Image (cartoon, rainbow over all chains, first blue to last red; front, side):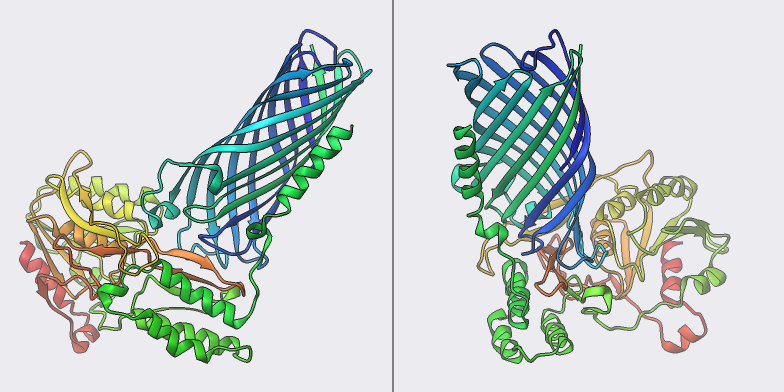
Length: 242
Length: 334
């Protein structure tokens, strides 16, 4: 996925300092597997996706907020069957610097809150043969670690998140079939979440940064019906500082 | 940089182990049959009330499916299995929409067609694609025809205008013959303009576990007045055997009002609304009813909702455009 973003960085032309607000457009790829309606994974790609981000970096703390809007049409291997999925996603990470031995290489540890609303509709033979409209609200709390490497005007970031707890509510027919599944707190035993973020940023002037970023995310819920979601995102960003 | 590579490798290893996510079903006749049978086994709520042994159905039809079975033969097997259920909400859909099948309880339609009815019995007709209404000729009676609940929701808000316009009539006839259902909320929009108070009109039961008799308690549903004005004088509701799904929900709503008389033929019957659609390994899809719908007496509507006055139209009358059911309704609504 290529993601073209604009970032506004306040206060400093340093590549790693203070506030950054960004807006971008890009490409997004995902696969959803919803056992209630199919044993097949439905896959889709979107150009462009929309992303807004806010980042704050201080001497010992790292804050990163990303809001991504996608509206995918995910097809089964049989093209006449598909899922539409409108999905605003929010991810916020707070990480604290653990070691900074060289000022170039740093390690962080912290938490990430990941939340999304998914408004889905499944169609077979291009027809709404049975109303599979499904709404899902999910938030996940993950343990996060991040490594950064800074050299002159270049910054490399790698962040990994492991899901700990999740708050998952599915309404619609999934909910009706399984009856009392509202507001079910999922534990690690029936919930999985892993995500990875890799970014390379280069300061090209006092006002402009360039960045390439890759985001991978996978999560699944076992109950009441298996629901898995995998997404890939590769972005190229241009950032403006002020 | 070494740490970055290690971290990346760990993530890739962990995520590559998600077999349930990445494994796809084998496309074979046997797998398709098993998926179809298991879907009903898991979700269908009426095995017990209909006294259907689904394992016996498996024993009969599973041997008929093997690697040499043609698509047509497999489709026929599924049709036969659906006929055991006798449930119009359950269906099989063939890829590319070449064909589909769902059970239909075949009865006399008792229906002369709306245009014939309009020309013979009604004054100028108004309304939209979903709701049509008119004054009955030479009578102080209003007539409303609702052909379906699948149209845009805005169509049904016309009911407020109708209730105002018909407010001084002695009675209103509501006709849902040939209404195959649609959105339940649209049925509620209509019925709420005829409710005098909040009333229980149905119960639902849902499957909760793998056993066929694992159902929820009776879940009550109510209909309450909405809109600026409600009509609560004489109301005659007409149904026939094609009145189905949301039209049956509407029928139950109206039957909860003490001033409503239900005439015509039994409704289609079957299980409740909200079927689930499920994709099969060969790209076909099926839908399975998921909710048992019961009357306020806690009886499933399996064989349709019985009218208070059962009346039909002979073939001779249909040929002559004589709607004996509507004539009876007019007589009762005066």
